Image (cartoon, rainbow, N blue to C red):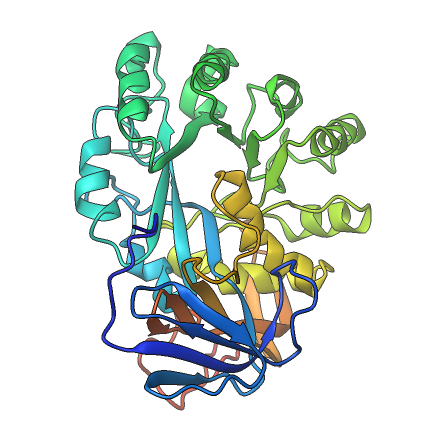
Length: 406
């Protein structure tokens, strides 16, 4: 059985004439065909495959990459007051794998697993929140009030019982969450992660604790999300010492994750960092119901923003597909090998003008956008498109906010 729980399909799937990007496999043809069996496994790949009795997707030169993976989203719908349904940011948006970033703690993870992870079409993994209640009432009732908020024994037990889907611990290291508790929650999370051999994902925001001190506690494989936030005291371009610490962290193997969100991504910070050679390792959305229709929209739009700021096309694709898979220690190499589960995103890179904003409300015009066409989950090809909040279901109309025409 494949980890991604693909359901057997009635037909084999043939993808014809796609341009591969982000696979890291030398010698791939410039026009690639992929044949997927009914069980979701790759049967063959190459150029000009001759196949009968297969459902065929004509790529017509569209790009194909490993399945897009959103390393930071919130999909515990009904279990927290901010989470969206997986399908709102998943396959219908070109995303095949979603990682929930701390919506559930040990006290309510069983619901996330039973009601969201197991029935989802997408592959869903989770960082378990260090706070027992998770984000039930996000930013209204903190999950890290004091030690009564954390049960170390139960947290360890829940992780051990769910190692197939729990990929690490999530800590929000920010004054609005932990008040004057400073670095204590992160130190506790690091201790548990050393015991369990898992990475910690840490949210950086308004100090305390200082972003500087957070970086000093992290080790190879740990993840800093909201790495390019523009918050006072937390921006890596307002403090040269902090910037050098971020560079050093990247060299030490600490993963810098975008984690856009409704309050945690700045065009100015991102552009300055990229110009100085500091790239994010992973691109993620921090999608939730307060960011979906405001600053973020979806992963494709977030990818387009990083492209517009100077990140190379293939780097953007890798940071949104194989790099996040590596971050959660899931297979990310040789993904086109025969017998491997098929998980791909078929997409175009289209020219045009689209006005978007960052989390501070700063506007920017994109001149190229990633436009997903299909998410391939085994032998199932899910039609996909970018999310647009202004004109849902309004064909032929031009949005007065951003110029997009449906």
